[in-house]
Length: 386
Image (cartoon, rainbow, N blue to C red; front, side, top):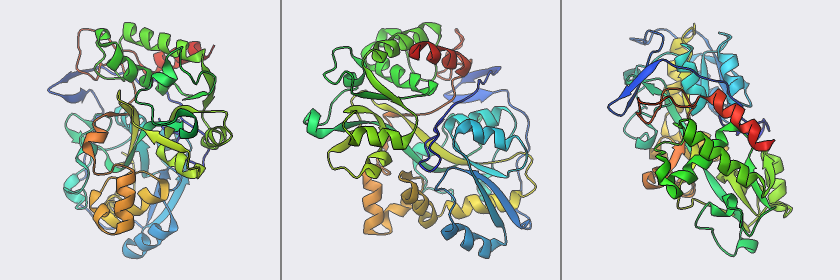
């Protein structure tokens, strides 16, 4: 759900996912199409068509990959998760760098195939533990995604105004916020999960265990909080450049952001923090089309980009934590990048809830109620903004 990519300048929108499923033992169990898994690698087919976020596929990596395998890479940049899903369903693309929401939709739709991890040697112990087995790309015990990188949706603040890092998200949610009128929020239905994270901490009586598993009562509470916030919002943002401009120009003092946006702002007074309540976040992974004619090139690409140096280069190019944390020890520059983006800090990411498409099955394991779908969230979001 992250239409996060800076070159695209257009952000997330999503469609509904309605599932017939059951949950148990802490694993996500769904009725999904029976798509076969590759058993062995064969001859490379000569090309690979990729749907990717801006910055994930660059000549510096593709040239070497083509030289090694003969697979010519044809990238197609997408600006939103919806666009990625639509493009993958055309059957014209072999692999996609999907965020958590798109991954689950593609799995449920039978558009991508379960992966044989044994055929991806670089999917190793060096892949961050917190990026393995996530519910958005691991279904019925089968992995569908090879991790690329991750990031948190942090609280950005103008230190010249706040005088330090706010400890709580209350500065963007509560009516008595001293920054009323200078608050920014992410303009997408998935932002409802941010309200749910806040309510999990401050209103435990609501029983929210996962911000993407909201029954009707819990969704109503999140919407009420969002409407309260709407009265003190200065602006909603969906364009990263506009968000940066607003902070730099002083129109915004606090609000939701990505670490990379502060870096692009190149302003020393703009900083980010992970408040006490935790946050939402985004985790990206490679998924392979269930109808690809170039499956051997696709597996080769996943293995190649999972190498520490290549995965780290992708992470540094975009501005996120790499999936392969072996990269962190390769140089002082690499370690500095990993430290900045908390790549090796699982305690940090234990407080981050990766974007996951809300579905009628409660992904928190409840079976006595039906949870709200993303279509419900989309409808609710329209009432928030009026």
